[in-house]
Image (cartoon, rainbow, N blue to C red; front, top):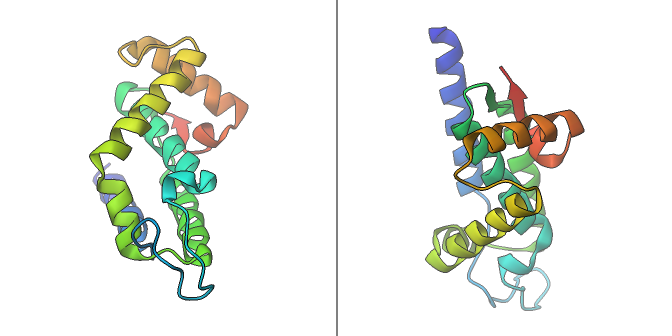
Length: 150
């Protein structure tokens, strides 16, 4: 049990380190490689949607004792977001600004609540979140690939 917990903590720390190491910059900055202005990260759907799926999976996992994170899958997914951001030319500061923005956090919360509402679930309904989590796992959706039943 202790070995498993330590392993999970190491994987979580690694996942967070990977996400913070994503080379990104401030919205509207010019990409050094291309010489063109980059759109704000909120407009890069692969990254914005990816973070939404991670946030929803995290919310489900925190609300449901019978569901936990698939740390390896989460790490691989975060690595893919890192590669995408790097390939697009964003800097570490751009990602940090995007992730820490109160406006972006509020917008992401609204997007998450809209997704839950479309699935017929309230963010305060733990049983509904657990049911949704199991359905996402069964469907092998992006959210489901980040979760597993205990």
